[in-house]
Length: 380
Ligand SMILES: Cc1ncc(COP(=O)(O)O)c(C=O)c1O
Image (cartoon, rainbow, N blue to C red):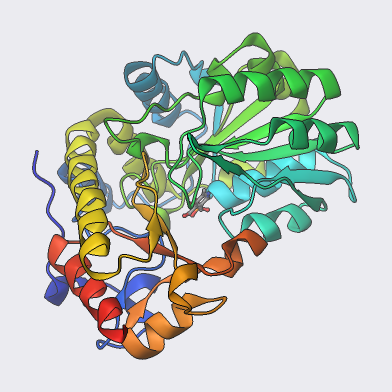
């Protein structure tokens, strides 16, 4: 199925953050929203819900868990027990609420910068203290610093907030790294909260491995938090899942307040259920458009901004761009906005490793992407 971004004339009618933060002179390639139209089955499910005035609280018995389990099995051969899927407002709430159950105030929680900026805030919101173990980059690409993780766990970290696939790198972690993490988690009794919200958007030449599926230790010490919100562009509808696969993790989450479930949006749940059951043809079309833009971006940079470093991602639609050779300063997004009228995410908000970098969202039309790179290149 072809998935084609809406034209700018339609996009500018949207009222979301991406389209209302800046004026019409700015091309917004920042926040992780996509410019594609919603998948038809999702639109239909939402229209039907409105037509039957179905806007109350979510029911405890609903189809979401079965829908997610069916998708996980078909897409990743991951066996999820629907009885062990619970929903909440969004992935950020899922992270904070699960962390609260597995740490006590002051406990260290490990994250891997450069990382999705809210991770720096979600950990203290849950009472934890951020312990940074940066990702490492070698000739073969990005990987987890397993020695650094072991040291952090040995030093007393109680939880590890993993991002798989990783935002902003679009890097699905290898099965070897994930298996090693699970062994370390078991050895040091560390809970691994694996944020897998970008996983459905793994490219055809990438391999996503659900953390809970890699080994008995991962099932024992892992909690997956995920949603349909990134892959089908439903962030504003508010519904995410918390998934466990062991008695140990279920017991750890026994204390989750009932309200965590009640705060799921019924429209988000209806949309997410439609996404996981009927949304795959659209998803595959979106991935195809994204992969084509991923290559277009490489070509545009080569031709117009050859000093910019860019490793093509293997998941999702975010590019982590290294502007350090161009001398645009610690935060190149400032110059991009002021001089090129292109809105990008500032690298330094992803951690100290992001100095001299920006994050660019290429889930847009090829025309918008080309125009954005031309505008950036014009500064040179
Ligand atoms: C890795 C990651 N986790 C969580 C979120 C936020 O998800 P939510 O809007 O469901 O809180 C995002 C949003 O882009 C993300 O990239």
